[in-house]
Length: 306
Image (cartoon, rainbow, N blue to C red; front, side):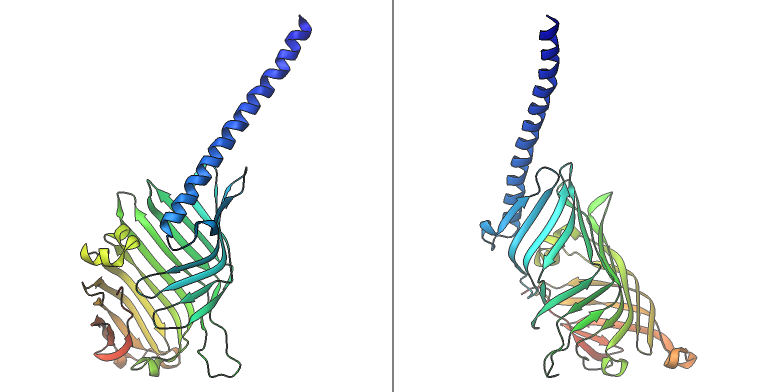
């Protein structure tokens, strides 16, 4: 009798453990299939066989080979292998594990390989909607230098970050923050930028975006919903120009053109010293796809959508 009880006492925990493991395996397998279907639905142009979910039993690892994402406005992102991971017990938080041979294309420009230093990215969801998106890096370069010197020059930036955070009280209202240091432009645009030079020492823009979840799905839908980006603080140090206390509002017209204005205090600081006589309010306007500084043509703004 005692021997039977001892055997039963040994078998019971083993059987319980086996049931728990079997249940976890079923949960993991079903969740992996669901994740694969969701990624496939979000990226319908990709063959389903290029999407895999791995990582059993410790995590969920979504892997995409030959990734290519293209927006209607002409932005393209490519990577031969893209991996993001999440804990089995918190599928609302995903972290970038790596992107092999990443490339980026802006509207009207070439496809440029990306190189990043200490790149970190995370994505958090709540109730099926974006709650937070963050990308930070110590350095970023788009493109490579052409040995002949005739091809397009690479863009470079030092430390920076991009953040989108949903309002806890209204998930459709997003807070946006862009912070870049040491931006080196690949080419000097026309107008005032030809005087200011090809390097921006600091660029910072923050503020809320109304109808933000709609914007994440479709810029065209965002325009129809009359969404807007209200700039609460804008700062730029570009060559001798120092622009601060910037506030304004940006929207997209029904035909896909950005429009709006940013007003703030500007000063010219040759050799780092402000010249009082050259300090005054500055207005940057965007209309009909053209950005203007003090009424002068500064740069062409890509369409938000076609």
